[in-house]
Structures are given as C-alpha cells and as structure tokens.
Length: 185
Image (tube, rainbow, N blue to C red; front, side):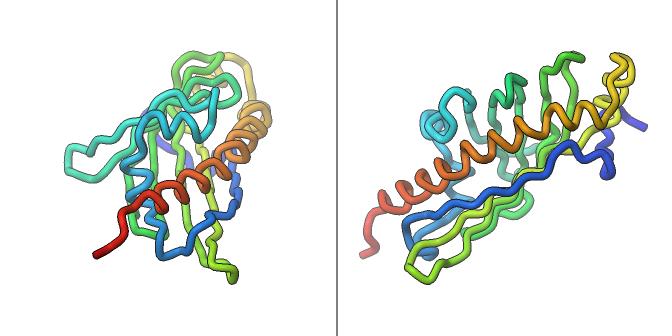
C-alpha cells in the first residue's frame, strides 16, 4: 500500500455549515467563484487562516484551486481538483500536504459547496468538508505512538471551527461577486 493511499474508513473529520447568500440563486456561480477567487479575496474569507490561493489545472486540463491555509495551527497546502464544477454545485478533492507534529503528511480533503434557493429570494450555501487519512499519516502516527482516534479528536474541532469561520464569509464573497457582475445587455 502506498503512503499516499487514502483510507476510506479513516475519517478524521466531517463538517458542514450553512450560510445565507444575499442574492437570488440565479446570480450565484459557485464554480466560477471558487476557481477564479483572487488571492486577497480568499484571505478575506478567513482572516488569519487563509494565507494564499491560486488557480491552475491538472496535467490533463481539469480546473484546480490551490490554497495555503492554517487550520488550528496546522499549515495545509491544498490541491483541489474540481470533479464537479457547476453554477450551484462544486465538488473538489485534494490530496493535501499538512505540516503536523509528526512532520509533513498527506490527507485527502473533499470540499463540497452547494446553493439552494430560499423562499425570500436569497439562497443557502452549504459548505461541507471531509478529511480522510492516508496510509502515510497513519504510519507517522504509529511511529509517534499516537492513536488515530486521538489524532482525529485533536484535529476535528479545529476543522469544524475553520468551516464555521469561513462559511459565512464565503457566502458574503459570493454575493459580492454576483452583485459586481455587469448587467446583461
């Protein structure tokens, strides 16, 4: 088994948060927003935690968002490949590099964002993140004498807190982006 092998049964954290996007759903394009997010705007979406963002593609041309973030003091470099990139749904998966007490390890982060209409002409953003261990992460934990359950118990609250911090700021950013679009002629 490869050190980068993602273990489906080793879920470190699952979290989902919601926030209101103060524009109609027709004005929101999550995929365009996330895959074209300027670095400074990314930083505004979680001050003190979001460090840098950029965009690129995979070797085979799939869109990709690269992010540098600090979650609970852990530096994480995310390489999010867009598997679904639609106006109202974006599903991205990253084999992320994280600097932990055990050294640099890899974890898989799955980021899923959706918007659904509200009755009042706004829409609701659901921002979900699932983090899974790789074999290399489990090996590093074993070498340090740390159980997976203890590590997950340590990381989970920080991941949840980060999602709680960024989700309403993402919603506000999406609304700003929608309102900044020039009117159609």
